[in-house]
Image (cartoon, rainbow, N blue to C red; front, side):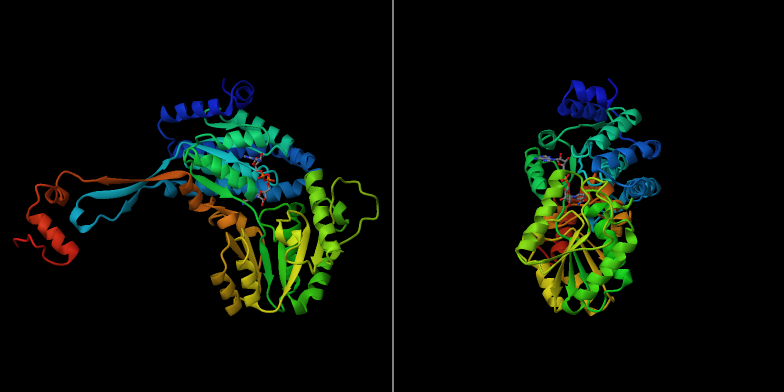
Length: 483
Ligand code: NAD
């Protein structure tokens, strides 16, 4: 049996893992050339299946423009692969390490060794890039991989499975399909590393399951990422960037600005400019080709409930942008919406929104902003719009978030050389950059004593050299000193 489809139907994920592990243990780890060849195969497959992936994602979401899939997913995957291929020789290099005085003439180095089999669990919101960038990282680090894509984008998951089965033998890369039960079983497997991308509540369960086998984890989770607009900084650049980050993929982006902190004097200006920018971005309102639908009815209803709850509790709920003239010709489109004056304990200010709704909370001083953020779970991303002045420095120094964007939103994710990951409730560990390669490699320290060197003189039976070593290390003569 050589492809994942056959295996999926006839054996369990545990069997696939056993096959991959046996192949891993019975073969030399992939060298630079072999790893680059695997990355090249993955790159070619993505380009070959580009149109199928675009169609599948759009069908899964109800609507997502092919252009958005290209920009937000496929370009990211190809760029990541190119980055890894370009830097792999450097990443794989042995690192010489310092040898302390008494061990001189010996040598020490670190080798980055493949961990073995990496499990990858992916969410539905960017179903291609959040599956394939972790896969590319695992392959670059010389591993084999098993992927568990989301059940909420079934057509895309099916194309991914077919594409990878046609590209790699199942002993190298396999796809396991299914919902939460399959996910739960998958997270219990004794992988050598597990990268989970998804919600914080499911992340907790995955960590518990992985702990039984002491499987090391990268957790890429979600949460509420704030965007801070410094006083007097409501301008075209700021608003364009916030609207872009909030409304791409219909707001269904882990690093989207979840809510905005705007100085109380600037709020009305913010609302007006946001409305004008959104009208320009989406000339046919929520029916514009580049406006993505909400992925399913459950999420659509969840978002409507957040709005109803805020409205009932007295917030201003403002639909912005162009109102479509015709009746809806699209499923599950939710208009870009601002919510002003929600209370801190309203659901919309407590839960991750994951949709095209932006609550605007006012502030009076930057200290109040820092305090607000620091009393909440640590966010995946934090955005700051303004001069790089003392307030900006204060925010950078006194808040902790996965990453930070200064005068931009979301595009830090496209910087391949930056680590990407959360902190606290938004995750642990990171991928992208050398951090990704290292998280999926074992840093093995090797100490080579050589034939002639001091260490042999320091070992029992203890004598003059041991005394010398003790004196130098401890800083004084020992009681037994004969020197
Ligand atoms: P989710 O946690 O519901 O699902 C993620 C994966 O876990 C899916 O493959 C799913 O099948 C599986 N799963 C579901 N229940 C499970 C269980 N009990 N045990 C084991 N596995 C289970 O997340 P989602 O709704 O697909 O994605 C949205 C969430 O992901 C948001 O919170 C978002 O912020 C987060 N996210 C984070 C990043 C990041 O890079 N940090 C990127 C995208 C999305």
